[in-house]
Amino acid sequence: MFDVIIAGCGPTGAMLAAELRLHDVRVLVLEKEPEPVSSFVRVVSLHIRSLELLAMRGLRERFLERGRQRPVGGIFAAIPKPAPEGLDSTDAYLLGIPQPVIDRLLEEHAVNLGAQIRRGCAVAGLEQDDEGVTVSLSDGERLRARYLVGCDGARSTVRKRLGVGFPGEPSRNDTLMGEMEVRAPKEEIAAKVTEIQATNKVFTLGPFGDGIYRVVVPAADVREDRTEPPTLEDFKQQLRAIAGTDFGVHSPRWLSRFGDATRLVERYRIGRVLLAGDAAHIHPPAGGQGLNLGVQDAFNLGWKLAAQIRGWAPETLLDTYHTERHPVADDVLNNTRAQVALSSTDPGPQALRRLLTELMDLNEVNRYLIEKITAIGIRYDFGAGPDRLGRRLRDIDLKQGHLYDQLHRGRALVLDRTERLSVEGWSDRVDLIADPAAALDVPALLLRPDGYVAWIGEQQKDLNDHLARWFGKPAN
Image (cartoon, rainbow, N blue to C red; front, side, top):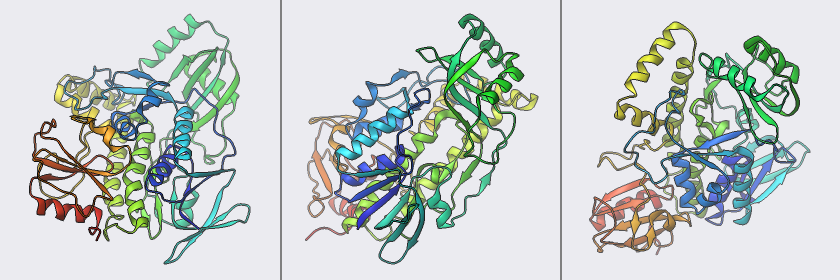
């Protein structure tokens, strides 16, 4: 019997597996695909908060070596503005990196920590009781775990078998994306793409090296069967309809279709089954937030689920996964709706786009939108307190080095400038650093394993109350 079975070994599932293994949780990851996806045109951007979280686990450098940094400006509705001033992070950039590389690095990280991964195993059903969850595979095998987490994507089998509501709007506009070779001259392609992109912000046809082009073009219709891939002829027809030429596209390497459906699951947890990533929320790719949102789900859930399994979780801790992450996803859905509307070629949305473009000349407006997209503006509701409460903390200098370097083990941390505080009773879950020179503007604070400030103060009794709130009863 496993402690946790995770359905899906994408970035969310692999990251969650690694977070659980930091706390010696027995994890099995089931992935229906027998082999990893080989496409390298599917470049995604890791956002500021995701890069910070990777740094907290000692992974950032591995990703930086394989990605390309670019400015953080201009990602809201593709409105071309420079990066705003005053972003509170040492990682104030985007990292463009092929998604298959992200998948591989996170899977390697999980395996190195001891997670078991089985490929070619599709979840077909589930049954839960007071003691655990029985997972049925498509080949008839049955597995048992204390908890099951569905990280199995937008068409999640776990979510469907769970029967939880997934309200929202269906796809109204589909888009084709693929990688292929092109016969047309580069100069002709570049000129035509520039002309089209003046009014069509979705259209892309750009070189990706080795003679391969990335092609993104609006689809002719909305496909009912989301599992049915497009054909090369579909791409040719749409290129001719929009550009007047198909550019001689041929020899496709990878073809896909995505829509602009926007949905959010009603509950992230039903008993011993939880949902994360695209299994819990889907939305248009505006702003490139989807993968980042899923990885951040995993960071929020991992230590809480581990605490439940290790036996020290306060009674309501696991429920805070829903209460914290559901509003965050709801906000992402809202801002992607706004970005899609601003990309319309209709006169009304274009007028709004021009107005917002002017407003973004104000640094405060530009910074607010970038902080929203890159998730560094999140504030969880931890109750009344200073503005920093419930927010992430940037990587600051300590006498031991950098703050994020002290979080590699996935444990909580008390930063104490007073040198008078103790974590006695919780030292098996919480670290203490007494550093009067720490770059803080408060006497002391408690940082959760996911990097959010859970307490600010200087009194031991007050700290003990908050340690108990988040990390359970003290050890004997």
